[in-house]
Amino acid sequence: MLTLQLLEIKVKIFQQEINDGLGDMVTNNTSVAYLQPLENIRLTEKEREEFLCLAGYKQELNLSKDLYPTSSLLVSTVINENDDVFLPNEVWVARNTPINHPDNLDHDDQDIVGHMVGAICVDDNGVIIPDDTEIENLPDLFHIITSSVIYTRWQSKDRILQIANLIEEIESGNKFVSMECRYANFDYLLTDFNDTSKDQVIIERNETTSFLTKYLRFFKGPGVYKGKRVFRVLRNLYFVGKGY
Picture 1: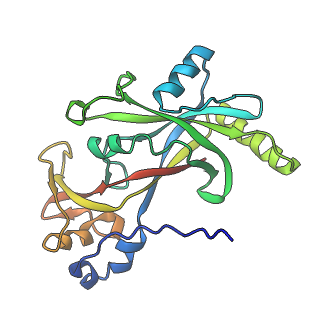
Picture 2: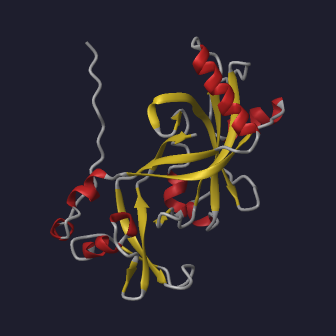
């Protein structure tokens, strides 16, 4: 009998975080999600071939009537509204991890409606970043764009109607996607309070600095330490899905 093991990621916890009552929150919260706009992708045969090839998708993809293709921005190298920092080097290393991971409805892993088939990185002008680009040559701001397929062939009439409504919302511009990401560790980023692009300092999270965890907004802190904004830098991250 085949037995599947549940893979759990445990972020290392420090005594100071336990003392601050954050032990369970640090170890049990290893995923994040946030919204991005979604649109239908219209590709010619040549464009589709080029896109999937650049995305590293090596298998032949038959985009028949049973598959509805979409494209969406998955993540950008920014500080997002959740106070999470996506550094260029971390995102670049994880750029191909979305491929073949599932798309679901409202982050319900029991309600899968498709999967991601390709991923490319583009700069802020939409120019594709070559896959052999060295990390030191990456722009500070770039984006991962993913292509996905939604399954349109179902036996259940209710499911067929549900997917038809989903596609209608996509085509009307009334649908968003929410990226799903997991991480193995995090550090801190301190910046100028009024201008987060200034005076950025990354501080390694360790036994000495872990007192900063309680100031992170993700852990119900104020997001401020001694007049500086404090953010969470996600480390060893990878993308595991997308919710419609």
